[in-house]
Length: 402
Image (cartoon, rainbow, N blue to C red; front, top):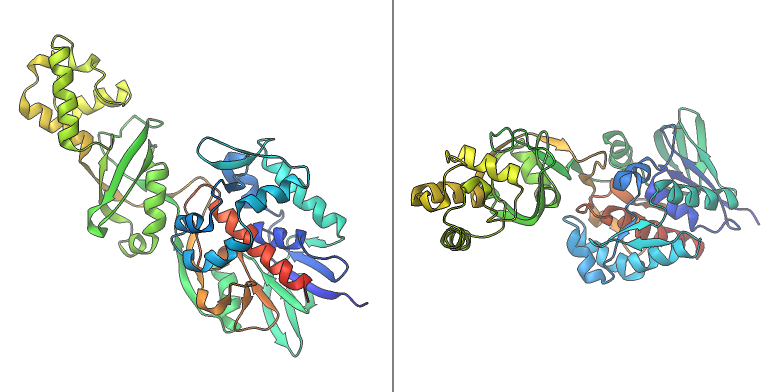
C-alpha cells in the first residue's frame, strides 16, 4: 500500500508528540525544523529538567490555568490529560515524578531523557528529521500541498503546522487564508527600579499579593526580587492573564504589592501583640513577620526607622509607614523581561477557525494546527506543554483512523 505523506512543520513539543503517535505503516513523515536542533524549548524548560506537565487531572480544573483557549481545551483535555501524559511516558520506561508544587518532571531530572525518548520513537518509525530547513511558503495544489523551503520543495498529503508563534510562521498561515491575533509576550517579569528592592535579588516571599489597580486585577502566590525588579508565580500569573492589556500600556503601569498577604489591620494586630510581649527588643532584631532579616532592615531604612530603636518606642506614625510599605507598597513598572528562556506568547491563529475535535483547520483541508501557533497560552507550571501533548495526540488519532 502506498503510504500517505505527512509534513510536520516545526520540530517542537507539539510536532514531535504528534509524530511519536503516528502509524508508520500508514504514513511517511518528515519533520522540518529551521533551527540546527529540535525540541529546544523542551531542552531548557524547568531549568533543563523539563517540566513535562502538571498534576491536575480534572479537565474542568485544568482549563482554569489557560488565560486564552480555556473553553476550547475542555474537549481536548477530556480526551487526553496529564494522567494520560504520565502513562504515555511510563509505558516508554520514562518514569515521571510529581513535586510538592504539583509540577511533573522526569525522575532523571534531565530534559535529555524526554528528548531522547522522542528521538527514539521517531527513529523506530523511520520518520525523518530535517534541521536547518526553513519553510518559505506553502501552496495548496489540488489534493496535495507544496511546501517550499531553503532546502528544496516537498509535497504532502497532510500538513501538521506546529511552528510556534513567530511572525513569519503566522504570515504563511495568513497567506493560506487563516486569520491571526497579534502575538504579544505573555509570561514575563516586571522591571522596577525602587530603593526597597535594591541589593536584594534572590529574596523571596512564600505568599504575596500583587494587584494592578488600573486593570482592576490581582494575583497571589510566591514572589521573588530579581536584579531587574519582581518575578515569581504571582507576577507571572498576572502577566499571563493581562498580557494584551499590559502590551496596550506599553509595560508602563503601577502595581501594589502586599509582601505578606495580610491586610493592614491584621498586620497591625500582629505588630502590637509583639510590641506588648517584647517591648525591650530592638525593632531591627524583631521577627514579627515572615520576611528575611535583610528585607526587614531595608524596610526599616526606607520607612525612616532606626533599627536600634526599642520596639516599645516606635510611634503610631512609624508603625503606619512601616506597615504601608509592607502591605500596600506601590511600585512603578517600567518595562518587562523575558522569564528565563521559556518565552510564551498570547496570540496566534484565531480559535474559531480550528476544529478542536481533531485540531484540523476549518479553512484548509487535510491541514492541522497545534501548539503555540494557536491563540492559546497558559501560566507557568507545565501547562503549555500539556496543551501541546494533548493537541498532538488528537491529530495523530485522527490521522491514524483514516
